[in-house]
Structures are given as structure tokens and as C-alpha cells.
Length: 636
Image (cartoon, rainbow, N blue to C red; front, side, top):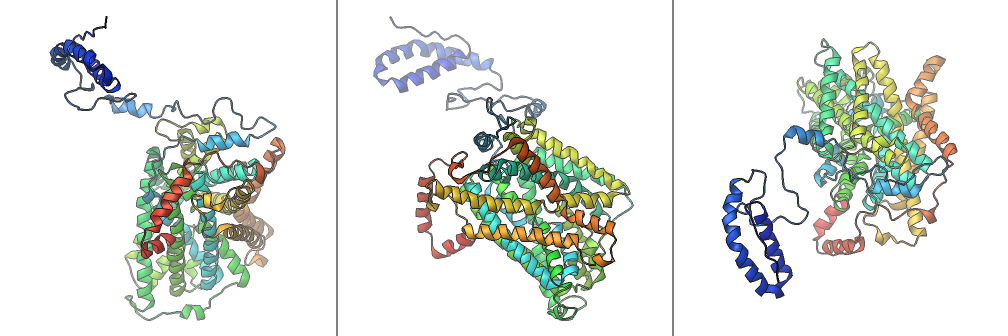
């Protein structure tokens, strides 16, 4: 005796239809039985359908409104109030645990490298960044006050030739560094990126020091950049209390980051476009002015390279420009940090990494060459800056003023303001992701790894935002002192980060070879290769030595007192004792081992499982490209 389905006037009618269709698909041999069963139920279902639709609420599924049945596990939309959805978005994602239950990061004696690698690799951060976001972060992400204003003091200290040479050498070093980072980030797109690679391939203690060094750099940069933004406002109006603008800028930056990685990506996309347009516009204007096309006319050519000259203060002047150049390029490594939140890093990241070359060449080298042609290093305004964002000391603004153009200095100041806000936006993103990664690895309080249902490390974002309140120093008489010491804390941090990336890549290649892998297995291979990583690492070490020399014995040190020399040294070398203060105690307390090449973890966190098949498909696709496209893709 077969059971008979009885449908009554309720939503069970839909379930009966779904059951019948499922049975017809899965058991075609039972057609006769199902036909009789269908005859028994069709009349009842047709009768009850109209009655059930009368009482059906707006949020229910209706067979009349959809031809497709909901699939197994599909959740139907509920019309919940936006306030409830907003509050729920901050709740912890039940499937997102910073440190899975039962794993131990550091138990007081041993650091568990494998669990740290697994936790950062399986990070639940949202992967909403697209290729256009990553490319604009790569092209315009670090164009900021270092280029627009800091290049002025560098020009005054070293001369135009030193400016071009130092920025060029740092650009070569950074090109090698970003390619090394790109190779590792495509293969292991893990949260926290650089500190995670140091932990995995070098030494967990060094990863701890680099992670906190990088986090502190960005934590300090937020109030630093907000104070800088208020200083740019002084260019137009210095009668308003700066704290009013601090509140406005802080709220703006925090709100952008509360939209998650997509908010950060879209904001950086817009900011970067504005900065890129400004630099390209200045290059075109500079060429016209140099050829005598300005209001005040007159061909300039290269006369300032002869009088007052190409170099100033000799070799020490050149070394002093290295530091400014390193600060100007800070933030380029965010491309690697963003890799963990990119939809497809194998396609988008290599293109973004290659475009770093064009940013270095076009936006830095060409722009600074033109600056050196238009402004003599003896111009007193270059050293008149009250801060690192004082537009009056920007060589770009000075070049425009020298040409007799009146309206553009305000435009350049607006661009500097946008650049400052862009860096402030990046600071919350960089610090929060790094803190979350440290928590994943057991190197920071676990609460910092709290990731909500929208994929935001919300606790880390909250701490980074709270430190932004330090910017209210802007309303005090000590704002310049506070500004300079916050700048000192973040000054050399990038050099340590870049050096660690290069060294981690060197060690990664050693482990990759030791464990029997070939370079053909890599999803993306660094164009400068292992040689480039050695060049990058050596350059970073040389910059640290040059910075020590120019910090301990600065230009004009013979006329300085002992107190002034000590302040000058720590204002440029403060990051070094901070890094050592993190590394040495952690190393001795946990007795962490240096990671050997034969036992490196080279498997946890690889994004694509069928990586060899994907590489073969892409090679076949590239083989069909015309010659022009192959050339374009090689460089871009």
C-alpha cells in the first residue's frame, strides 16, 4: 500500500510540488506510480494554491512569481529593517575564528609556525578588491607629501642631480622588492602579507617585530596625516581652530573604512586618479614652462644644473636624499597586503606589480627631473617649510609661482590635501589588517582578530580609529613637536619592511629549491628574480647605513649643540630601537628557531589547487596573443 500525500491549505502545497518534481527527476522508473500520485494531489494543490497566496506575506516565496524552485540550502530574502541588518553586521562571523580552537601560537616555550601559517592563510577577510582597485593602489597609492613637499628639502640638501639619482636608486630597489612580494603574494595570498612571510620563511620573532613595526607605522600615520591635513587648510585660512577640521577628517576616514575593503578600494581608486591627473598635468605644464611658454616667459633649459649646480653638500647631500626618497615611496607595499582581499590575485596582482615600474619612471623620475630644471636648490622657500605638508615649500608650487601663474598653487594645495587623506585612509586599512594577522599568528591579543559578518577586522579598525584622536594635538601649541616625533616613529619603518620582504623571498626560493620544486611551478615569477631580491636587500641595508651617518653627523653638525644633534639623530633613526625592542625580548623569551629551508611550510595557503592546469591554460592563451599584446603584457 503506497502512502498518499494530502495537501492542506498552507505553504505545504509548495513543498508537495517540490517533492513531486524531485521524485520525477531522481526516479524516472516510477513514472506510473508518480502519475497516479500526481492525479491524487493535483486537484488539492490547485485548490489550495489560491488560498495560500492570499495569506502569503511579501517576504515568502511564491510559485506564481518564480519559475525556479529554491535550491537546497538557499536562503530567501527577508525584509528586515536596515537598522537590524546594520547592527547584525558587527556581530562576529560564526565561521570566522582568528585562532581555531585547540591550536596554540606561542605557549611560552615554542612558537607554532605551522598553525600561524594556517590561520593567516584561511583568513576570512572579504575578497572584494578588483583589478582596477589594485592597479590604482599600485600606480597612485604612495604618491603623497613625500613627492609633493618632501622633495623640496631633498632638492635643497642634495641638488637636482642628487634628487634624480637617489630617487632612481630607491626606485630600482623598490621595483625589485615589489616583484619579490608579488611572487610570494600570488602563491600565498595571506592576510598580513609581509609579517606572515617573515614568520614563515625567516624567524617567528622577526615576523613579530616586523608585524608590530608595520602596524605601529600605520597606527601613528593616521593622527600624523590628519594633523597634516589641518596644516594644509592653513594655506587658505588659519583663523579657524584646527580641531574642527580634525573632527571632520577623522569621521570621513573612519566612515570610509567601515564600508570594508570595498570602501577602501573605491576611495583609493578616486584619490589615486586625482593624484595621477595632477602629476601628469604638472609634467605637461613643466615642459611648457621650461621651454619658455609661461606668462613670465623665457627659456630655462638646464641652466640651474650649471648655476648654482647639479650637486649640493657632496656625497652626504646625496645620502640625505635617500631618506626622503624612501619616505616618498612608503606605501607601495600595500599592493601585497591587499592581495589577500583580491578576487583573483593570479591575474590582477602581476599586472599591478608591473605598473609600479611605470609609476616610478613617469610620476617620480620625470616629475622630479622637471622640478630640478625649474627650481634652483638655492631657493630659500625650499627650506621654509613649517611642516612636511607646507605647500609654500613645495617645489611644484614654487615652480608655478616662479612662472607667474596665480591660481594653480591653490589647486596643488588641494591635491596635497587629497594625498594626505589618501594616506590616512590607507593607514587604517594597513594597520587593521596587520593587527588581525598578528592575532591570527598568536602574536597579538586574540580579540584583535575579531572579524565581523562583513569581513571587517572591526576591533582592529576601532583601535586604529581611536588612535586618530591623538590628532587633536593640532589645536595645541605643541602640534609641530608632536607631528615631528610621530613622523620620526614611522620614518625608517618602510626600510625594515622592504628589506624583510627581499630576505624572505631569498629564503623562500632556497626552500622551494630544497624541497624539490621548480620555478615553472610558480604562478607568477619575479622579473628581476633572485638577483633582484639581493639587490633590493643590499640597497635597504645601505640606506640604513646612510641614514645612520646623516643622522649622527647631519649637514652642518659643526654648528649644532649636543642636545640638537641627539634630537636630530633620533628624529630620523627612532624606528631602529623600536624594532630591536620588539625582536630581542621576543626572541629570548620564546626561544624561536630560525626557519630552515628543508622544513619551511610551502603548502599552506596556496589559493589555487589546480595551479599547474591553470598555468598551462594561461600559457596556451598567451601563445595565441599577437606580438603587440605580448609586449604590452610583459611591461603592464
